[in-house]
Image (tube, rainbow, N blue to C red; front, side):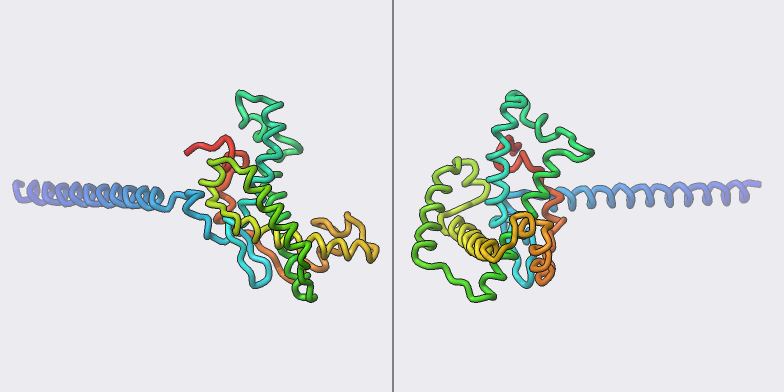
Length: 228
């Protein structure tokens, strides 16, 4: 009888020990997972060199795309202040046709960045070069744009005059290329994102946005109304 009890007790002890080991392993797994998540947490300022979009064989960094974010946020911030100056988030969270303004703004930013890079690459492919007047114009615009940046925006995006010139140079190429296409008879609608002529050119470059980056970005809280 005692032998049977001893066998039962041993089995129970083994069972308890196994359960405890499993619980410790589970707890350790969650602790390691939580630490990994904390270590991999997205930080905008530390992710500036990450690829935001790819156009053809060229990768456009988040730093470069930051220009489009700053322009969008600065322009919309005026409307946000009018809507509710005490709570800017309330504007960005307005839902229009089942889509938040912040989501529509993000899509517009990505589209604009891709569009300008598509036209820039196509212009260069067709032999476009900026003349001295255009280069001077870009430099003047860069100085003007840098003068508009707040200290916080400059810190968050790490923008320099050279960074601004790089973005505005591409935009200038795109503008001149589109201007020539309009002289050929194409309309703004055909040349804008989603337009027939634009899509014809865009299809040559197979642009892609990096969701691993953009999914971590909330427009309206990057260079304004941010939480650090």
